[in-house]
Amino acid sequence: MKNRVALVTGGMGGIGSAICRHLATHGAKVIASYNKSGNHEAAKEWQAQQLAEGYDTHIYYVDVTDFQSCANLIKQIEEKFGAIDILVNNAGITCDTQLYKMDIDQWQSVLRTNLDSIFNVTRNVINKMIKHRYGRIINISSISGQKGQYGQVNYAASKAGIHGFTKSLAQEVAHNGITVNTISPGYIETQMVMAIPESVREKIIAQIPVGRFGKPEEIAQAVGFLAAESSGFITGSNLTINGGQYLT
View (tube, rainbow, N blue to C red):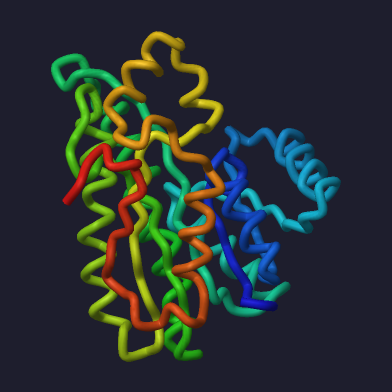
């Protein structure tokens, strides 16, 4: 994937950062998009830290819930780097509560960020991929989108929707040299997961056959595999990475 242009949405989180580093290590020109509630200084600090560690990653602000904001982002990237070859739709949020307590904002904010964003970004990328007859699209879903999760009807619904999007788009663009796949992580050792009380984490680990949380780098390696030129015969698939916690 040397010199391929790669866009990773939500590129500054635990999994996103690992994906950006992995793609950069393998020669891609990596762009990480971020929102961070408009905290541009935090984004610049993240970029500086990546550079200090040897990863030259470009950053762009975007509101993935807004179609025009995504269109503007893609236009800026294409003007500076050329067409996007690899798209990793990784942006996502949670807003957990039981349905009977969930308000409309909690539902809509999660669906817009996690599912509408997939359309908003991919729709603005796909035409150039079709024109160039090449593309790798990897959508990050979740174990919750496969088995459901207590208190996560909004999150699980958004992540389940990604599977249908992936399978349908894969059929539409396969003849154009474009692959579309999904990765469904289980519990990954990110800052958010490690903030869970230790007693709760121990109960979660007890449900994982391999006996531990996954590492962000393991998700990044899977992304790199699907993003490679040599993976052109894999499309419409979902790669489950959850330590055996849920098998389909």
